[in-house]
Length: 347
Ligand SMILES: [Zn+2]
Image 1: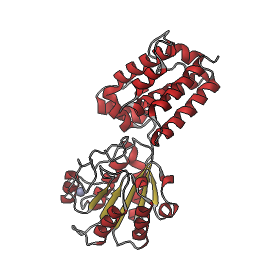
Image 2: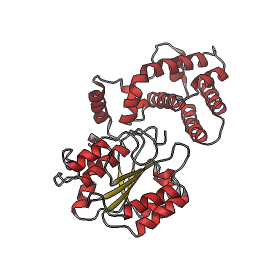
Image 3: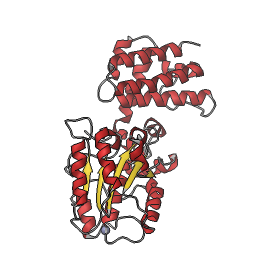
């Protein structure tokens, strides 16, 4: 999969050969939409938009809704697609000829200069439908430096009614010259109550509050995690209890954390540590991720020295950074688990 695994898109690289994203906004997209509506109304919509925000808030969904709204011939003043007109029907089907998606090809790790040149060429041609032409680049920070430079040229001499949407969770990874050419649109994480209301509606049931905590407050991430959440909790609690109780070796514990779910297991561990710190500092009454009373995990949460807990949290974030590089995953996880056990028995 080429797109940000934490975001809401599905599909692979290439022009529109993936399942189309919905064209309606999510409830927490309102303020970003207001900002763009004002820009269009005053004819100050930039040719380059930097759509930034954390993973799991639906940035790509927002880009899809924005493109559809720009194409839509039936919309009112607000920049929101009507969903009914001929343009909207094309957008919904994912076949609008003036929308181009640029993603990481399945066999590559970045978005290359040739892909950018090709899309810029397409944008410079006349619109197929006499309206806007839009290219969405996601994740934009995965463009190679030469790809970013090629894009910069297009932004310096833009064709009328063309919009380049750069979607990113890490704007600092883009060239400063490219960033400065773009209008920044923030897609923020919703507050907990709005996120929980939306999740309840989507799931048809009230989710456990800890689901959102493990998803880092990102509703789409929580929604994707929901079907596996009970299993994840059971596994992680059992694994950590056995490890902290010295019933299993570190190699076995680290091994059980590996695989496709490693990032999610680290999310769980991070949420547990954060909750533990919150209990220790009086911010919260109990750690909702300690699912068995009297368990080694609950003992550890109660006994974990707060300085040590912060240190383990730092190490966990460091481990995530290392895992993005060529570091050996088992070794990184083993080191982290040993630090956790040392911190749990330090006091
Ligand atoms: Zn429409």
